Image 1 (cartoon, rainbow, N blue to C red):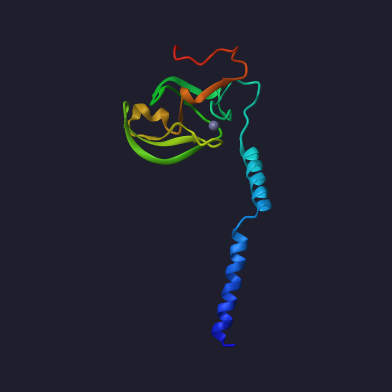
Image 2 (cartoon, rainbow, N blue to C red; image 1 turned 180 degrees about the vertical axis):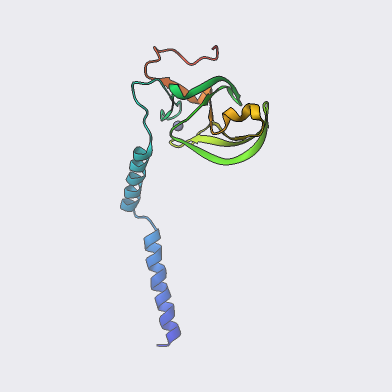
Length: 160
Ligand SMILES: [Zn+2]
């Protein structure tokens, strides 16, 4: 047997091993699935039940505490939007410069980390001094939120 042939055989074996390792079996797939579910559970943040909170209307993940609400008078692409000081369970896309009604801003789209729905945007940077108060704050469109806990069954409306 030549060295070349041996190498060929060795390559075949290595290839087979790699194929088996990367091809998830049914049980491994099941294991990955449960790990993924547990990770979501572990990393999803829960706000205190005693507070009025806003949740994702699509998956009910908590998004913000009512105490973190700064302003209700913002306009999103789908109607009214709220400005929050801080949010939870929210991921952030890359920042980009956009000219808004109030001037040039660097903003990043934000999305629900649980169901991946785009919720609104984050103000990364405001170029005009009058708009600086929005930096680092989050806009969530009303269309993506539901009120929970102690709101006296008051529905979300656009008439504030
Ligand atoms: Zn969601």
